[in-house]
Length: 172
Image (cartoon, rainbow, N blue to C red; front, side, top):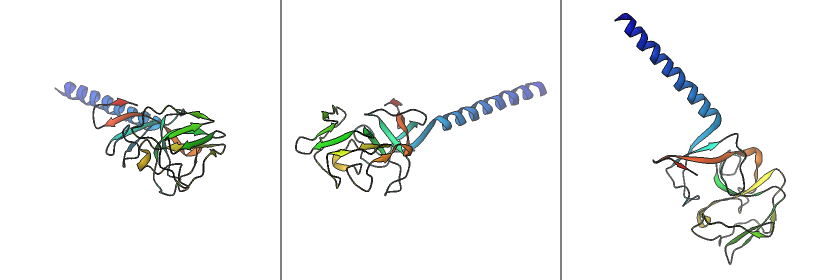
């Protein structure tokens, strides 16, 4: 009986160590955050939990998570539109976003970009920065507004790669 208890305790200890190691690995690789707001609808909805991959370098079109270096003192979840040195222009009559003169194919949008902010276009993104837009362009404070502006690449945590909750899991 004593050996059986000792074997069970040893097994539980191993399971606990594996669980702790997985939590540390997951925590070092991913940042998990709660989506609060409607600026990324329909891709992400308020109340969802998402995971951003820290070491991954985001690409144009990725949904990214940023640190809190902005006027709202909150992490931002937005779509990466342009990198430093690129020129962004928006035709607010047709709702078309251009990067370096080429129209973006934004099939993920439900509405066109018809609302401007207080930033003048065309805009050349400063080196070391990125230009971000929310998918819900009529309800998103993003790089179209000076209070957010172009975001430093150093403030990017990484691309959002997974929706955790509510279920089911969904790779983005």
